Every structure is written in C-alpha cells, then in structure tokens.
Length: 506
Image (tube, rainbow, N blue to C red; front, side, top):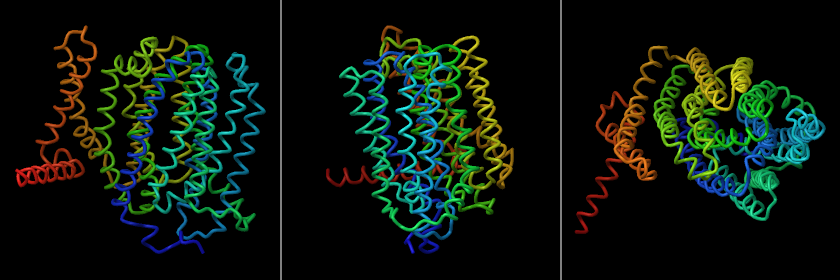
C-alpha cells in the first residue's frame, strides 16, 4: 500500500492551517512566475508583432484546452478518495496519458479546419505542433494530483517555476532574438509543459510500472468526465473571447486584444489561482459540514475581495503606465482594452472562490451547468461586441463576468450556511478600502502635471496604497474581519520586536 492512504491526519490536516500554508507556497510561486512573465512580456512585445501574437493566440487556445482538461478534472478521484494504493495511481496515470494522446491526435486532424475558421494562412501547423502540449499536460496531471493530495505545494511551486524559467522565459526570448517569430512562443510553451510534467513525475515518486486495472481505468474516465466537461466549458468561456475576436475582427485585432487579455490574466493568475488550488481540496474535505464551509467561504472572500478590488482599480487607473512599461509605446491601442477588461477583474478573480465552494460541496451536474452558463455569457458577449469593435468586446465581457459572479456566489451560498444579508455586508465592508484607494489615487495623480508621466502614476498609486494601509491599521476589528485583523496584529508584533532589538543595540 502507498503511504498516501496514511492516517486520518494525512487526509484531513487542520484545513485552515493547510490552506494558509498552501496559499503561501503557491503565492510565492506565482510571484516568481509573474516576475518572469512580466519581464518576458516586456521583451517579447518589443521583438514580435501583433500579427505574430494573434497567430499564437490561436495556438494558445489549444494549450488552454489542455490546461482545462488535465489540470483540474483528471486526478480528482485520487484527491477525493479516502484510501488509495499504487495500483490506483498507475491506473489513473495511464488512463489519462492515453486520453491525452487521443485528444492531441484529434487536434492535429482538425487544425486545417481551424485555419479556415480564422481565415488565416499558416496557423494550422502552429496549432498542430502545439497539440503536443496536451500530451505533456496529460503526463503531469496525475503526479500533480498526488502532490496536491499529500500537500506538497512546495514541490508544485518548484516544478512550475523551473519549467517557466527555462521554457516560456529563457527559450522563448532567445528564439525571438534569433528571429523565430511565433515559433519562439510555441517552443517555449511546449518545453515548459514537458519540463513541468517530468519534474512532477519525479517528485511525486510515481511508479507507473505497477499493474493497472482495466475496470479502474473505466472508473477514472467515468468519475472524472463530469468535471472534465465543466472544465471544457470553462475553457470555452475563457478562450471564447479570443476565438470570437479572431473570427469577427481578424488575426491582427486578435493580437491586440490578446495582449490586453494577457495582462489581466497575469494579475488573475497571481492573486486568485493559488487560493483556488488550495480551496478546492479543502472544501472537498468539508462536504456535508455546511457551517464550517460557510466560515471558510466567508474567510476566503474577506481575504480576497479587497485584494481583487485593489488590483482591478489599479489596473484601470494605471493602464497607460502598465502598457507602456510591459508592451512598449507601440501598443497604445491596448490601453482602453485593458481598462475595460479591468472592470471585470474583481468578479473574474472572486468567482474562483465561490466556484471552489460549489465544486467541493456540490455535485458535478451543477458544476457543468454553471460552466455552460459562463461559456454562453462570455462567448455571446464577445461575438456581439465583435460586431462593433474591440472596445465593445472588452466592455461586454466585463459586464458578463459580473453577471456570472452573481450567479456563482448565489449558488455557493445556497450550499452552505450563509445568508444573502451576510454576503452583502461582507462585500460592502471588503470594498471600502478599494473605494479609498481609487479616490485617493485619482486625487493624488491630478496634483501632478501630465507631462511628468511616471511621477504622476507612481505618486498616485503610492499615496493610494498609503491611504489603504492607514485604513487597515486603524479600522475596528469587527469591520475588517478576523483575517485582516490577525495580519495587522502579526505585523504590529513584528515591528515592535524590531524596534526593541534596535533599542537594545543602541
């Protein structure tokens, strides 16, 4: 038997402590990857054209398909099971690998049709080659699930960071300098997926040579299919906007839109994805205990909403500086796209918290239905907006994200012991520091001449953050919640300890 079956302590550590430890590691990893991503984006945007980014956006849809199918759905049977052995792991591994090979072959076969859909010559070969990423994700899916089950978030962070550093950062930039164009992005993504999968296989100590169970293979596919369907629908929702823009407005417009979408995705990946990866297994352990689940849902929202809101307002107010810094002066058309997409950043991040609740506490049918609703809302908004231009697409998408978040938070609340009034009060209090930041930032920036571009943005953002810090330092504990109060107390103790040490030295 594998040591993964372990004791009660292995399968249900203190959920709160486990959640915080996992979030710390995943946030650290996201910070490292985001730093590399920001540098890579800044360099690549100065080496490649909007047309080349548009071609890659079509291939990224394939990569996103792989991520949605194999990062979230397959492997849940291992995460949720109380006891597993090495045969269960080996069976799941080979089942998922076989499925990934079949899906990659299917993508290759339809790549010419996708090229015709976009009416753009030359992207079929790019899409076909990118399908290899699907196989890499399939190989890494079960090892990742094993590491999540055992709480090895440190290992997950390490493999993801190393893979990104070698592939999408170093290799992509080097190939772009050498003039490989869109292929620099394709090769970077493929090498990233291969390295991450290999490292996860090694760290999870997977033993794939164990005898597999044909009946178990059928069970893996059967049990994971509903969640895979919901993930597929979620992929359609997240990539439908790019597909709609490429179809209605052309590959060049897709290149511009995809850069604004990418900047929002970087923020989203940093501040919401780590929390979601930890919350999903945490709520799975709490299934049936609606009172505790309500407590954790409220805690996650109190912790996340101010951060999500601050990121959204900062992205909207400082979009000119973000675009000039990360993309360069040639990409000014992306500024209003980013500002409009930023209006939907808060619900885009926050719905991952509520979906983690629904995913852990609810059934697979409800998950698939909500994902279908999300796909219809976002794809419909993108296609309708595409009839009028790029900016309407961005505006309609933000509105659609708010509608979906209301649906998601309402469903999550119906599964746990939390009322609509509680949610309204929680959101109202969480958004107070966001409003303070927006008002103070805007007023401070207005005091600086427009000709002092960088000083204006730095001063406005700095004064806005200082105002938020003063609010959190002085607000009553009952207002900001236990999570932020604990963080404030911890920071206060640390500052006092430092002051005492300095006083003792002097």
